Amino acid sequence: MRIWLIAINPSIHCFAVSFLFFIVLYCIYPTMVNLFSAFDPFPGGAVSYRSPLHEAASQGRLLLLRSLVAQGFHVDTLTMDGVSPLHEACLGGHYHCAKFLLDCDAKVRNAASADGATPLFNSCRSGSDACVGLLLQHGASVHSTHQLASPMHEAAKKDHRECLELLLACGAQLDTELPEVGSPLYSACGAGAASCVEMLLLAGADVGVGCGRDSPLHAAVQRGDPGVVELLLDFGANTFHRNSEGRTPLDLSAPNSSVRFALQRRGPYSLSQLCRFCIRKRLGRSRLHRAPSLSLPPRMQDFLLYN
Image 1 (cartoon, rainbow, N blue to C red):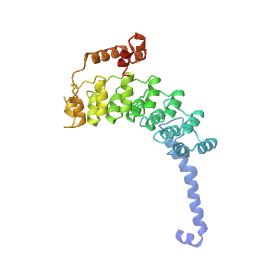
Image 2: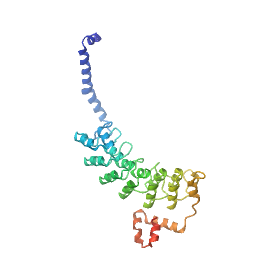
Image 3: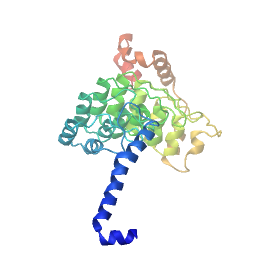
Image 4: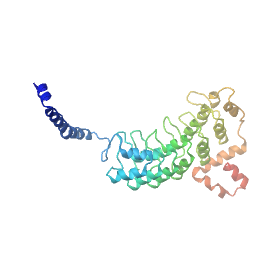
């Protein structure tokens, strides 16, 4: 009978569909939104899957970003995994978009996504020292509360030296060792980031702090980078240190490799080298820049500071 009525009068069918749409839109949908909002992991902010604001920020489209904000889009709109437009702008290295969002009071402190990434971490990943400097000016913390999303470790691993220098200038810790990640120096050695390895060592990083029993030298040898191995040896790396498996860096090196030759041709450290290691350690990172005040001969100062 119902099929016959719809077939006879199609308007009845249209009315039924419209009525069902009305019920879903104005009755069921608001109820579901209220239900899920009770479990909102990001209270106090708008949450979406991925808004046009995220797309504009990730693509560096500043004019579109301005237009969307003017239309009422919230600058701190988060995706379901806690990613904000500022995260996207920094990951893309889009300085002007990041600056605009910050000028609109985008959240920068404690703005971590579900995986612990902050806008500062994303800036270090992209290698945008401009974004790093901008975020630090707006109070971004150089210290990470997440074990796998440290700005220092990310900058070191990606060999973004300028970002690393900015972080250190704002008080980032040189030898912070994170579980499964190790120290920034260890991360840089494992990635073959020679420029950051050199910068960290010159800044006073402890050449022996790695990841558990693994030293930075173990990581460099496993990476197979003779240049990084030479750098570590110049700063006093212990070639006899054993990891958790009882293996030395030489044990990990491939036969007839340039890394093995670099390890084998290094004899015991000279007395002058041992004195340099000792003096630098006693001075500490915070006082290395005051070495010229020791009234040492220029050649000795250059030797002490690896100039």
